[in-house]
Amino acid sequence: MGALGAGIAALGAGIGIGLIGSKATESIARQPEAAGDIRSAMILTAAFVEGAALFAIVVGLLDKVL
Image (cartoon, rainbow, N blue to C red; front, side, top):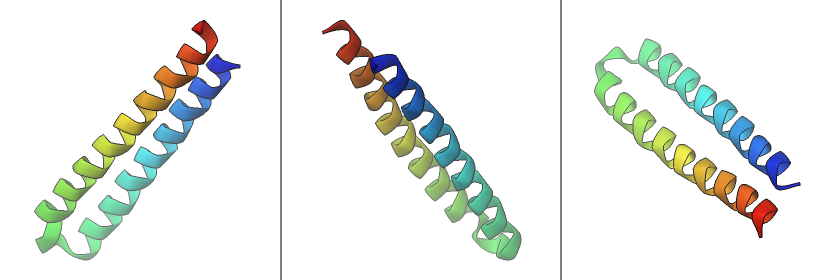
């Protein structure tokens, strides 16, 4: 059951980061002068999503071990 939870966490993170990139690209297309600020916010948000997903994956896999 832990591996299934870890897989769902990874899938959710992939979808989330994809949506972040999609919306950031759309925002830069609408307002090119704000590209630097948007890119910085996108990278920071993607890092937070990645960190939360990694934590969820570790917890899911530890559930299997313990």
